[in-house]
Length: 527
Image (cartoon, rainbow, N blue to C red; front, side, top):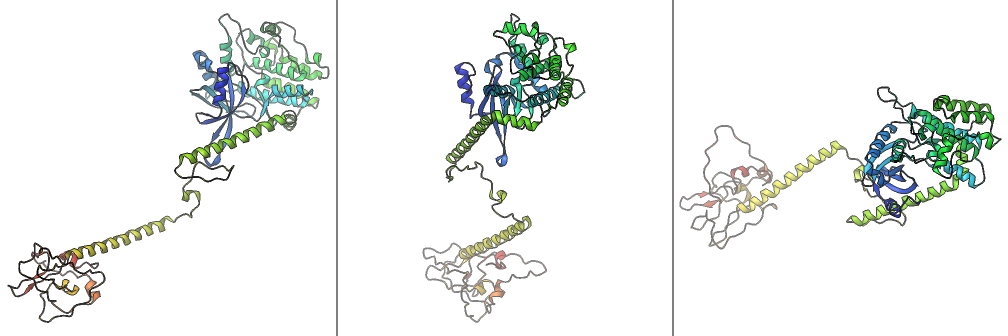
């Protein structure tokens, strides 16, 4: 990890790796500077979706400057409206316990500063065609930002104010993008001390910006001229040992030509670069597009206009090992993160998840129907089956209820002897019994043997012993007994009170036999 200042700040940055910043999971530190620390972050989604972002978290001490935070938010909101292939877009602006942060698109590659530093360390030069393509891409992105308008068509007058090789990202796809829009103006305001001294990247400032004068898009044109000069020569233009000497070179000392440092540079390219470095803004290129047009005409005339494929090959040649190492570290971290999540999920769940060593276990277990593990169900058939199931359950409940009620309604035995069981046919007959005795029917399986109560008579029974009830008529068949009785028309007879159980009345001479069930149960086909 790069040193980001005091040991406490560095410890805080290391502690943030692997933690959540709102919806984003911080994976690794990409860079650190005076404004903040840039993290590689991951945003996960459904179905294993994930996307990588670069998140710049502002340093904690900057939150104490309310004026800086207010200006930072204003500028960041404007910069978030810039959408161009050569501009690193600001996706989101947020604030959390860790501080304010910017969410930007992640560009796989490295900065132009690292690209040229790597070439210098290998004692190589970046090809001229690649240099010109990088500069043309950045100028296209700058012009898109300068031309941005609001919803009513008024120019937003966006100025980057911090164009430098450190803010130019060269991707492995061969495209170059300008980044860090939206914070340079606030940083400039913060850099002005009470004594009026200016601190910051003086080596890439236009003279009017170094004098704290009003700036416009032409300040970015001057800064891009400095970048072109240094890429062509491989040396620093204004950078000196101290800030005072650097400022003096920016404001007053003669600016050397690129050809004065490297005679192999074509005069046409040299002229374009020097016009961009004119200290008078009125004689400088008025727009980034004008600068790009002049540079492209010179490059075409000299057959020095490189392609994105050539840039990608150069990045792979110089930074290929670094990119591969970063990819391997990213894959390892993502694998460890998935395994940690799977372990945590299995520990928190009531069951046990068995996984092959090294396998990634999903934390989310989808429903069987939704995941396709079971075939889909026809909703109409399901409704029909539900209705059939409900009807069957109702029939079963009615059978059980009638059986239980029949058991309770069976005649009890007299205290002096057990009564003879009443046939089912007599139980369904409302007429008094006839003179002849009918053979009793076999007791159906649905009926149970009546229980004798030997302790005491039922309260509804007479004090005299009861005789066996005689059937009133020939027994009907089982189907006839099970069929419900059809109701007859005419006035309904007045209800007569009946005892709870059928008994014989010896005093009257005729038995007062009734069915062992209430009227509403006599026609119940399930009894």
